[in-house]
Image (cartoon, rainbow, N blue to C red; front, side, top):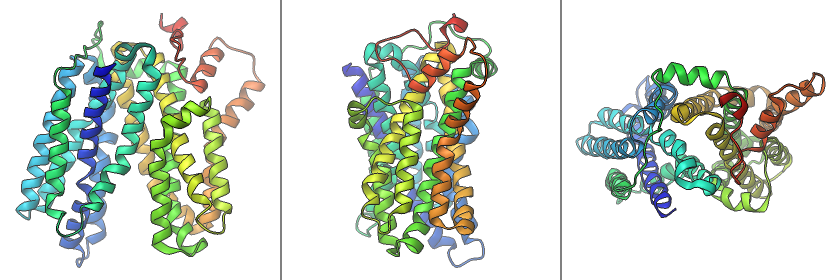
Length: 409
């Protein structure tokens, strides 16, 4: 288990490293193009550069972890992240901002196979502690999206700004050092049909399809919520940017509370989605921000807990020879849902108002669960019903047989 902890620590360092430069890069792009006619486009493209590799490549690159030794793959991603962050640091120091953005985006791209490879290996590496290890990994993955840029934002003060990419490079180097010597063998049985076989396996497995659908829904809801907090703070709470900053921080950093929350409650995916929806309804009803802050933190922690259950479902439902690819596909679905939420939420808040928009988001979180239960109540039972119930409940930490074991053999 010590090796698992070291592996997760290494991954945390590397994940923080590739998130940390983006506030500085966005500021530099704005400074470069802010007075021109294409300022919004330039900043938008720079911001999208962080998410685009996951959407465009994770579904295919994730399968690398099914065809090579996963420890070598993880260390290669660490080394490449470090190399491109060093290039970004040199580019920014030379006032070549565009090259800095490209290099930082390439650092993100090189890191995309790491999460699927590590998550795919945890059932073997962690054994009966797989559920806890998976929860820790998902907490790191989700939190890094917030904590990395938050640390980068703190470094934007003028005396520290030149050190931003130096700190990012140092974190990446720390991840590479920590990952040295950890054995993560690849799957015992390697598939010859790579991505195509993984897609057939996932699309033909109802529990895996359901987990991907819930993953997309959860990230759509989370992103739409985060964006809707801005008009809610401005127009409904009348507290401006300060309230938005606090609300966003509580929602984002609430993810760190997922391991504690999972020890206090027995969660399933439907219960988690209903809990998130209930918290958002109460947030929409609050006349001032202060009562909403703990609710947002609870929603953030619950979201990570639900995502851990969905990751565990994919670990159980997909054979090891396709597992890393399936988890890479999940990355594509989740980040794609984030992009969709970024597009939909502003228009919804503008047309309906912030409070109604948040209520719509809360309703969206529960509709698939309600629809599934309504359909199940009006049709005969099928052999997949038990598997579907396991998908909702998440993996059995006691080591129960895999979801869909009757089909997968």
